[in-house]
Amino acid sequence: MKILIIGGAGTIGKKVSGHFAKKHEVLTAGRHSGDVTVDITDSRSIKAMFESVGPVDAAVCIAGEAKWAAFDAMTEEDYHIGLNSKLMGQVNLVRIGQKYLNAGGSFTLTTGILADHPVLLTTSAAMVNGGIHSFVKAVSLELKNEIRINVVSSGLVEDAVDKYEAYFPGHNPIPMRKVVNGYVKSVEGKSTGEIIRMYDNC
Amino acid sequence: MKILIIGGAGTIGKKVSGHFAKKHEVLTAGRHSGDVTVDITDSRSIKAMFESVGPVDAAVCIAGEAKWAAFDAMTEEDYHIGLNSKLMGQVNLVRIGQKYLNAGGSFTLTTGILADHPVLLTTSAAMVNGGIHSFVKAVSLELKNEIRINVVSSGLVEDAVDKYEAYFPGHNPIPMRKVVNGYVKSVEGKSTGEIIRMYDNC
Image 1 (cartoon, chains in turn purple, red):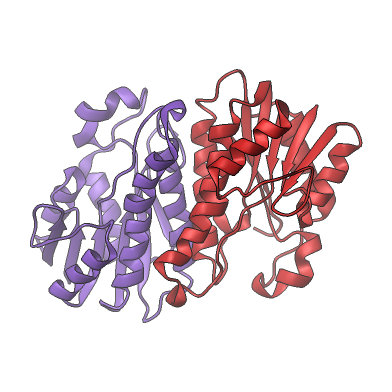
Image 2 (tube, one colour):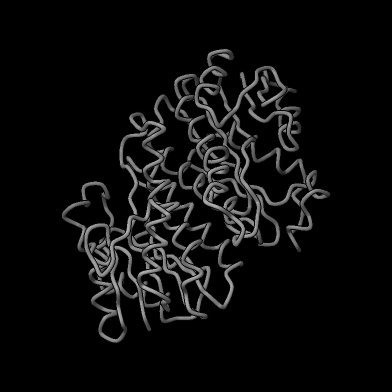
């Protein structure tokens, strides 16, 4: 398979890219690195990425951001960071990318445990993740050419523990091999419209 | 209790308003009717509404729209209708309204079954509903002064069957007395961060 991984150099992305590269042709995209650069907040940039890469069998997105801050301190504009990036960035990736996927191909998006089990400071991040979960279920009913779509939602990943554990009291880290398997299940499996949850104690 | 019902003249809103008015002081808000007018896509209008109404014990929102269309036909701008109205309209209602709720007061937002069980044409509507579900869970961790927040998510409501049944094949309509009870559970109960689901055959 020819697999495009947006965010292929990130904490999760590099493990996922490394795994798929063992038996597939992998192309990575990122804001500042990768085989092609892309800014997912800009639809023109998404289109330019697909034009550059050409048809693929799988597009995996492990990119997108949202502001973390206390609800009291969040402005209306702060919410638009997540809406433009992790939410509409992934929606636009599917909206534009559907024309570049081979028949029977797949999209795999990324959210996270906050959609179902938020922690403090995550009103925006949780909202964006929950929106993508419902979007994936809805769009799976409409994609053509047997194109599938799933979303991987992991708990705090092992490789991000140092950076994020203070925000996730009592959360058991998810081993990277399990996180990678979420993406393998979506790309190499046959399901569609699935929220692939990898949580531990909830 | 003094209860502000945004969208109090709508299909669901008029039944909810009528019920609460039997034993509470009810004020309704709407775009073109009600005790006070409000455009929830405009933060200044939301603030003006609360300034006009003064402190309340409960703010119930049964308003907000999103575009329904085939995924193929949805433009990026089409998604922003739902993002600005049903999603950020309700977020801004909580963000601004928290200063106008009496201690121990409550917010009750509204979504719908599409968050969990979408149908064709609802990539935007489902996404917005799912976003609100996760937002409510997240913000319930942070609201102060014992202010609670819940969201009511109903299946196709009985009073909207004529207009919407073609979009919801096989969905059992939810009787209006059950829909009203979702709002009663939120306003008169003690729970917070709850998604009050009223679905039938799923």
